[in-house]
Image (cartoon, rainbow, N blue to C red):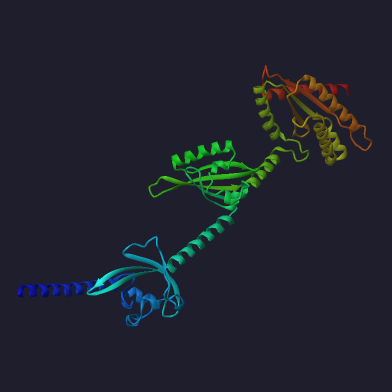
Length: 425
């Protein structure tokens, strides 16, 4: 009997020590955890203990909280109501959302996870409270940041595009959508190559594959709806250095290309007559000679000299001399075709390259030229007469020659004509 009593007393002593040890553990947990935790009496829901984080959050003292029920932390209109979260509930843990109120009257949404426990002979609930307003604030901040980023993306004039390595559009701005004339909602989530013409899509795939392979950016020029777009593709690597995304930046350089074309035209054009200048003639004529050699088409090269320009300048002034040059330039333009290259290569000298032409056409062109000059000279208002000396040469694709040789031959023929004129006078 004494042995039984000793065992019973020993078990009672062990229970007390266990309860005291468990109590110390709870006290340590509540004091040093960063979580909001309440120890609640199971039967009457009175708050037994609260963590330091709970005191700081709710702004009550521990004595004030111990005089309250856990339900007293809710606004009066919500007391007795709970919203279960069945997706996280289990046999041992109950999870629900509600609203709590601080001592100063400020309310905030919370998620409460409650689990039963024993403290000595008492059954308690350990309730862990998570402040959902922090998540809401983070979500609001995230939405604000996304809106700010979206506003920034849409504010820039460059088209911006982020795709994965398979070409799926992850992000884009309004500029890109407008350039391809598709709504932004029909861009994001769509494969980039499906938004492009087939030939461009094939070329773009090859360029992207090279960027992924080399992990180096690539630059190229696109023409999108008659606009020149300078495109740069940058690789975006993950933390392992592997290309995971591709960023496309496109700047509209149409105006720059137009200005370059204008400047090029100015560099190739004679300002007085609006014909091609010497540089323009040799640039375009060299290209046409090479093309004729490939296509086996004939060419005619004319070399003309405005007769008596010095006399016109001496008698009527240089302004009238300029008028004479402008007049013969207009006659040459009307004589030859739009496809032909008509130029003033210097002073009173003109060179013309007739494209896809033969000797039969040469006769027609010369007859037209002399008829237009005669019509001009027949006008009573003119103070001077126009006259030209002209030589020509035929380019035979079966016996190709250089542009310089053609000019030399036409020039020699022109000077023979000039000498004949002088000998007659």
